[in-house]
Image 1 (cartoon, helix red, strand yellow):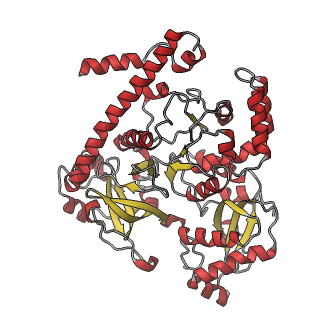
Image 2 (cartoon, helix red, strand yellow; image 1 turned 180 degrees about the vertical axis):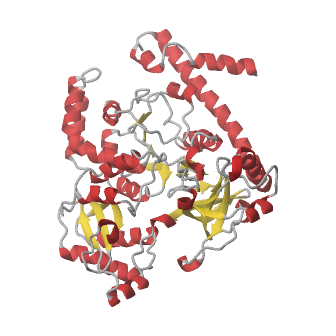
Image 3 (cartoon, helix red, strand yellow; image 1 turned 60 degrees about the vertical axis):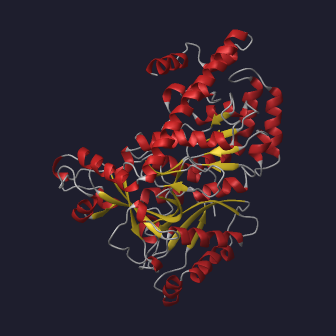
Length: 531
């Protein structure tokens, strides 16, 4: 068996990479070698995915033992004075002796050392490899043509696969040039290939920026394709691009790539709005698939169901250790005692608590999930909201999910408008109260509406009062002022995402905030207000 694996590995390292073989396809022998390389690569991945599937079955059938092993891994890896527990211990002792810590608290030590949340360094761990392998297998089962030679192109420098496996990856006939980091180069290469069946992007928000920019730079890209920069001139393909762009954004992806079936992005906090905009406009009629849900840079949920809309994720029982903190109804303070994966109840909501070996901190991530089913003894969940993205200028606590729903209701009342993106800022961050009552500053990116009337702006505040009685009471007493809505120009949110990604502590994928806490980020959008 070992000899066979070595032979397979050597075949994958053939000196002629796939891209070169395709360029010289006039030679039958080289084309045969390319086909062999692809088959061996995919066969190897299928074997690895089958092994990971078997392990997942065993771990989810015996959850208690799996989580105990994860605990031993955490205890073994923890070092120094941060580890009050020594050696092996049981789950009950661990939970009784280590207090829960919020992510913001976990970032500062008495020594002043800055720490990232527990999973920020887990992006290349076993969970990410498992998510990649099982995600590829699941995607191939539902869309078998996607991974055929030349079937997939990536449009962003970052990949939606949590851990792209290096040795067979380039043999799976990606259209994207290996190692390309420039989004313009990636998009241009994809546009030259009309037969694509799948698009990949790091996150839905990044893909939204790509399609928004495509409308702006479409003429320039068409000229490059016609002139053969790079590659051979393709005047007919350039004409197709111009014609597709002239018909507007709705359904643009399928006009550019008629055989397209699915879009693969990596799910993380704050991506739902970009995903909804893509589904309604540029990617209308296409399926979306995320192989994993990532929080603070680490994989916390596996998606085994590409055919299911809305993102269903299995919480795996391996490392890092996952606990669930019940969320009480009404948004009040959460219960003090966590439950383990096998104890989760259907239709209940929980906040994720993660522990890894770097700090041995039981960290409350703030990500809230709702249990919708079970896979063996493990819960299957939907991600609902992030507690860290709560608005509160007078203790009213307007959650991320509620505000996004209310804003959507308001935008539906703005004739012709389609919401693309938004963030909120409490007025104290921008010092914008000016002696008036504290309030919300809301920045929105729209399609179909260039100016906001005062009537339109007032509709958001009215919808908030209807949805949140506490907010209505504060508004009636004058303790909170009316929400102020600002329309920003094209590219404003792309610039915000670039600023977020540039932070040294930013994980990948960077979660899209819906409430900005830093003044320089809020001012970045403030400078781009057009109405």
